[in-house]
Structure formats: C-alpha cells, structure tokens
Image 1: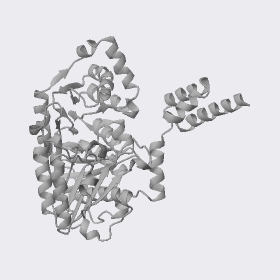
Image 2: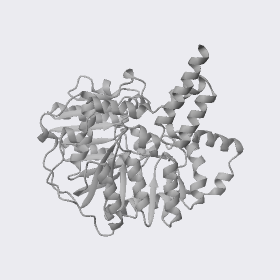
Image 3: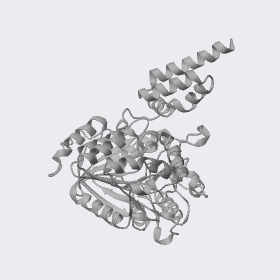
Image 4: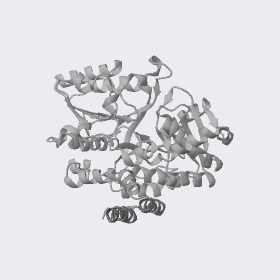
Length: 470
C-alpha cells in the first residue's frame, strides 16, 4: 500500500509538471526528478517547482481584493493620440507592443527632472510636502527612520496637522531595514499608514511592493529607485555604506497615472476607495514637452509587462543600448535578446556595481557575463559607493526609469513601477550620466573572467542556478 501511495505521488507531481510547465526543458527536468526520486522528487517540486506567486496574486485580483487603478478612476476618454517625435519612427513597434499590454497611454506635455542622490532628491521632495494643500501619497520599499527619515516623519506630521490627507504605504519586509519603525515614529499623528503584506499574514519573501512614489495634490510626483534613508546622501555617509541613486521629479498629465498606481495599492492595503476624485485627479496643465507613459507591473498582471517592454526596446534598438542596474540576473530570453542586438551592430553597454550589497547576486551575474562579452556587449564595474541606479536608454531617445531591476525578482516576483519616456533632450541628460559613469568605471574583459580560480567559478555557477529566485 505504501509503495502505491509513493508511486501515485510521483505520478501526480510529474503530471502536474507536464500540464503546467511551459518550458519543455523545465517540464522534462521536473518529471524526471519526480519519477526517479520517490518522495524527494515530489517534495522538491512542491516546494520549488510550483509557481504560487502568480497564483496567489491572481486570487487577490479575482476576489476583488486587488483592483486596477483604472477601476478606481477611469482614464480620460478625450485624450488625443500622441505622435512620436522626429527620430523615433523605428520605435512605433515598441509603442504598439506597449499599447497592447498596458492600459495607460503615452501622454505629452510632461516635465521630468533627474535628481542625483539624496542631496538633490530629498530637499525637492520635502519642499513638495511642505507645499501640499490637499493630499500627499507616499509609497516606499524602505523608509528608514534615521536622520533624513526623521525629517520626513516630521514634515508628514505637520502636513497632516494643517489638514492635508496624508497616506503612506510601507512594504512590511522593507520596513525591517529600519531600527525604529516608521509606524512607531508616526503613531498618534493624523498620518494614515498601512503596510503592504504584513508578515503575520504569511512569510511572503516575494510579492513585495518595490515601488517608490510620492504624489502631492495630484499635480506633481517623484519616482525612481531611491528609498528614504540617509545613506543615499553620499556626501554625509561612509564610502562603504553609502548608496548612489537617481530619482525624478515629474509634472504634467502622466502624474494622474502615477496616482492611479498608488491608489491601486492603497485599496489593496486599506480596502478603501477614494470618495472625492477631484482631490486626487485635478485638471493638470502641460508642464513640458516630454512624452511619457506609466507602466505599473506585478505578478497579478496578465502579461509580464516590464519584461516584454524591455525585450521590445532591445529588439527595436538600431544604434545603442545603455543599461545601469545594481542587480543584473537576466533569464535566457533576455540574454539572447542582448546577444542578438550586439551581433546585429547595436552598441550595448551595461554598467554594474563593482561591489554588490548582495554578494550572491554578484556571483550569479559573473556566471552570465562570458556569453555576452563574447558577443560584443560591453560591461563596466562602477566603483564605490554602491550604485543602486536603474536606467535603460535606447538610441538616445527612449528611456525607461523607475524601480525595476533586470532580474526575476523585479520582472516576475514583485510589484514595480516604471516610466517610459520618449524625448531626446531628456535622453541626452541620461546619456551624459552614462558617459560620466563609464569614464570612472573599469571595463570587464573575458580575461578577467578567465583569471577566476576554480573555486570562484564553481561558486559563481552554483549561484546562477538560483537566478529564477534572485
């Protein structure tokens, strides 16, 4: 009887893999493991092989616990189609692809200003909080109540005291980075604070809210890759613990889509739908000439939006691709796309931190570099302090900015938010940032990889095995 049960479990697990694994190699591997290792094979498949992340997120969506921002406040119906500027005709296919997988549309008339490190970003954010008259919506993965964090706490409290509706979303896992909890620091104030997926509801290492957003009065916003913590102020922080990053000040019609993204998360964490749309979605006049689109992505979405948009941008590139990311662990599809782009003559440059704050990711990345280097992709190591900046630039006209890294955690496991920007003047500023970074960086060569010792090569390739979970 026992052997029959064990055989049934093996067949059940193998059948599940056959039905649900889209990658034939993955399906064959799991089926072989389940059938050749009774008990152990099905156990490992149950723990690692079943994608519970997307399933859990889809359950939230079907139950109505998580709804789209457009369901909270509809898109404007009178928006005129936006025509791509001169020099971007080859990006029409990318625009069409994005139209099919993203509900938000390209919007003209925006201003996007880069802010380098906390020295530029935090004063601008605090000034906006001080100017607020009706609403402040803040979402951050990490909100560390240290020196600058305490200033944010004080300004948010004062805004709430003068009658501004202040809402704050903190990721429950990211909250653990702070010795003093933001909940404790804001306790007793009129600030409404909610946590995204409190850990008492389940040990969710994935499904984290990695978005960074500040929207003030529905008129201006800040987004990018920067958390709220003093180590982003690199002039005041030890070189070994400082973190370089870039944030962006946004004005113009695209702010309303950033607002929708926040309110989508707020409904999820608080179960609250807005009662007065005019407070959150005022009429917004054009503030510049930048064309931008908000891309909100997560495991609950039907498409892997950001992954497909990155791939579409790579395939549309005709001259150059510049990438800056702290965590570069792409899957085979993206490795192939970058390889093909380089081989067809596109100049591909990828900038990584020389010393990563997560060594395991650094090791996994090194195991992927030789194939890309052999195809002509240029890699650079940026010196300390650790560079947390996330930028993607195509042909000096199309830029992707936001919270997403080029790894499975950002593209498949967590909730992210990016902006797609089509504007040559803005792209020029980003290109200059890349050039300055390259000038101070060390180029990586195939010889560097060959000089690794055998234990290092084994360690790096072992880390690569876990790339779907990094």
